Amino acid sequence: MMRAVIAGPDESGLGSALEAEGVETTRVDGIASRPALEDAGIHDADLFVLTDVRQATAIAVGKDVNPGLRVVVYDENTIPEFARGQADLIVDPNLLGADAVAEELAG
Image (cartoon, rainbow, N blue to C red; front, side):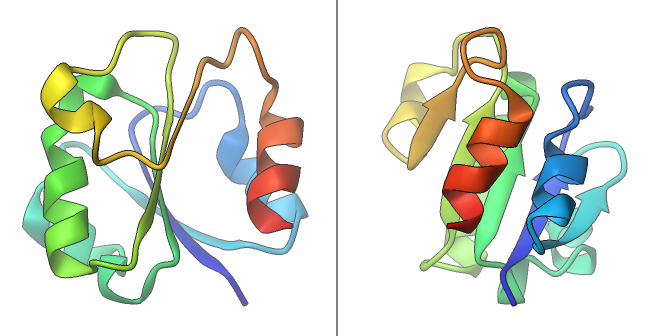
């Protein structure tokens, strides 16, 4: 079973869409610090979904803990340049809905 950690608000419902596709999800409450990511199970996750680019430093932390982690940024705001190269997929929710993104990620 695929596992995903989601950090940031999920107003577009990507977490629910992933769950509907059979992905086991856990959420980071508050700031996606290393301890918070570890508590959410980043070590064993297949996917890290970041929905708040203001927490982009969490991408490097997630990749440090789990080098095989796929990172998806799902936010309408622009991701900082320093984190752009570490993300595997960057999607604007205004351009592609949560159901379509979840289907692609789970497939």
